[in-house]
Amino acid sequence: MRKHIIGFIALVVLAQGIWAQDVQPSTELTTYYAQINGKAADSNDQLRITLCAIISDGYTSIGYSSLQNNMFAASTDPTDFVNGTDKTMEDIYSSKPYKSNDNGSSASICGTGWNKEHTVPQSWFNEASPMKSDAFHVYPTDIKMNSVRSSYPYGENNEAKSCAQYGYGSLGASTFPGYTGTVFDPGEGGEHGSYKGDLARTYFYMVTRYRTTKFTDGTGNTSFTYSGGVANLTPYMESLMLKWHREDPVSEKELKRNNAIYAHQHNRNPFIDYPELVEYMWGTKKGQTVTLASLVSGYDGGGQPIDPQPGEPVVKYGVNWSVNGEIESTDSVAENGKVSALPATPVSCSSESNVFAGWSDMPISGTQDEAPEVLYTKAGDIPAITEDITLYAVFAKEETDASGVTPATYVYDADHQEGWTNTASKSGSYWLLNSNSELISPEINLAGLTSIAMTIRTYGGASFNTVTIHANDQQIGSLQAQGKSLAEQTWTNTQSLTGNAAIHFKANYQTNGVGFSAVTINATGSSTTYSRYITSCQGTTEVIALPAEQAARKIMVGGRIYILVGEQMYNMQGQRIR
Image (cartoon, rainbow, N blue to C red; front, side, top):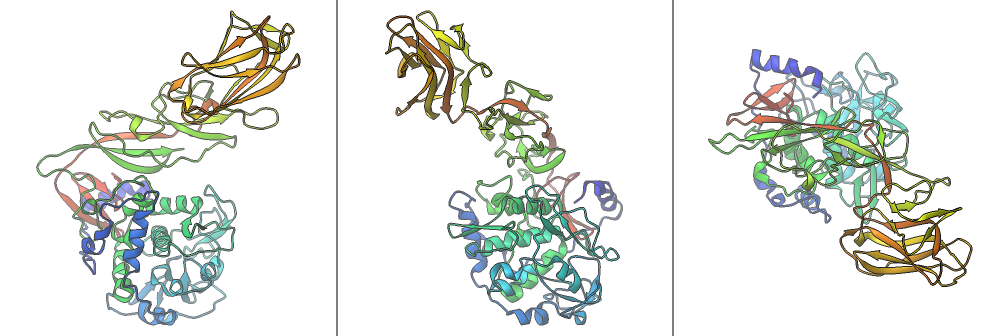
């Protein structure tokens, strides 16, 4: 739901008291989905595997030819796909209402007839069954616009609408991050507003129902991937569908359509029944265990997004994570509670080589050489929430050498000395380590130490001068100079080291010491390969106290269903919108 109409929603609700009709599910949801209780979208994909089994069991294909007769017929039968009482159907790409007998197979101009649109084009699965006749992804669309869409992936663009008089979609270059090719933008048409959320929940259904199907689109696999026998949405398509799902909540028409398909196919779309499952599968709650009883259903409005205890109003905090001013996700945290999961890694907003580093409670302006004093990289690091806070998205800028190759974790030379301690003296093109000096690195994660390279030479004629390597006051290795010319020597770590410590380099020599010009420590883990930090994306999170009340009421505005808890309004994804 767009932010600029929130005020209008509140006015309609208060002035007219429009309450949603009681659209009841055509089966008992808690029984139908009982097996997902306690499951999570973990590394074994258990939640999706379980959902796939549920919505595949009992599936009955009515056949492609029967879709038109049984699923798109003009009728007052509530199991048919009709809108209103005038026996018309709504084109998902426009505001054009069609009668069922307006169907056809070809049309040269918009608004002259409808046919069946496969939101996942048939060519992407070789027109195979049962995908071809699965009603969950087959919708009525204008014949001409079906042709314009062709097999292009969904997306967003800035092109003019192809049929402006009806508010149809458009074809053009993608403006959504992750893909720059040609995409079809469904637009914001339709009697009940956007169908983008419907399409998102359709794609989430398809990649769940047909989890092991290899979808091969003809546009460089921008929509689906397939690896290890498992299908997934591409990062681009997953991000786009999450955005559409959140912006366009479940509507009453979707609830009716879900029931209608169940009456024919005997399976359901779980992301219409329980929209919050999308967050558990791909969003802010990915990896968390599902508690079925806590999920909010659009059919009865009985669930409460903030789940207060009876008779004990609980203060919770609505957490809006945003990057570049756009809300990425919404979470809810109890007072003195912990943020359970960080939002997905935001896309860098700079054309330079920037990498997301973490969240900080210290704002940074422009660039600086040091990391923020507090940098949160996992949810458990964020302190208990007791008051309103703002967190900033922190991006690290890669340092590169002249060849464009990213240097190792910690580099010491004439240009990279931040964080190092050096008591050696400079002698021409190198530094001199003797018994009175040493070189000390910044503190690193020893468990991630893989190797150390040092450009060294003998000094004073001895051929066996060495540099000893120490950590935690113990020698862990050594490097030996091979002669009077500077040459790189590499020590490889084969030990099981733990803890965080600085690396100390000392000379072990017979006469005058060892000269060196550069040291490179290769390590992973808590250390970082980036030395400059920026916050050009200005990501923030607002934490707002929300007093919970007992009464939860369901309302309908413009075909969308919302839950009222006290004075707060939530969409069916559990997001607070006012």
